[in-house]
Length: 104
Image 1 (cartoon, rainbow, N blue to C red):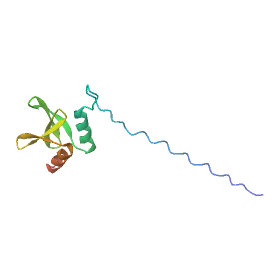
Image 2 (cartoon, rainbow, N blue to C red; image 1 turned 135 degrees about the vertical axis):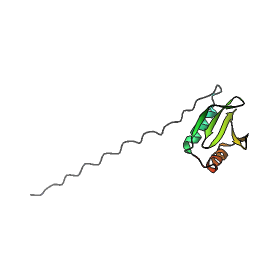
Image 3 (spheres, rainbow, N blue to C red; image 1 turned 90 degrees about the vertical axis):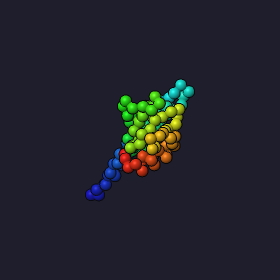
Image 4 (cartoon, rainbow, N blue to C red; image 1 turned 45 degrees about the horizontal axis):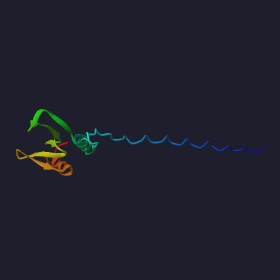
């Protein structure tokens, strides 16, 4: 008697990948992303610690830790402390400064 080979069932399709987490920054009154949220996301994407320095301010602006660097934000500009003074800096340059100072 001839035996019939039944076809093996097809493997189940893998489940669909979960959608990428959608970034949902806070919006200001003009509908633009809140700059502090942009900086926080930039830090997270680059594995840099970003946190407020509690009780610390410069000209009334909250000071933050960005890796080992001290920064504050003013009107969508990041200022970094260099030699006891604060200077405006682009986020990419701030990342290089933080890495050159040797910290997360």
